[in-house]
Amino acid sequence: MYSSVYQINDPKVSRQMNELQQQLFDDFPTVFQREGDTPEVGNGWVKELLRPLCQRLVGLGIADDFHVDQIKEKFGGLRFYASGASREQDDAIDAAERDSYKVCELCGSRRDVTTRGSWLLTRCLECNTKKNR
Image (cartoon, rainbow, N blue to C red):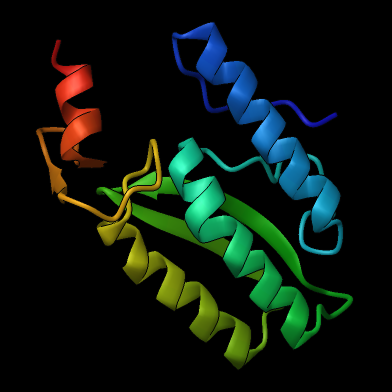
């Protein structure tokens, strides 16, 4: 089992992250070929962005030299770094990265999503409200 480097203080959320990520790795072994490919993003992006992106990448064909270098959040948006991707795969990655600003990183909602804060976070109104209670 892969270990997550993305830590959340709530143990229930951490377990859920690991389970969602493990399911992603199990479903797309050609995309996640190496340990350390663990996405450093919230559940919402795993479900709503990474799963469809992985389906698209596999559909386009994974070359022998393809590998994920890093998946993380930066400046409120998804960053998916991969080597050996085709032009079509790069386009799919770019589209997912652009779409990330419209998807709550935590729950995957596309309603009332904003990117704000001193540490830029992309969250829906509901998740933002829960965080500030």
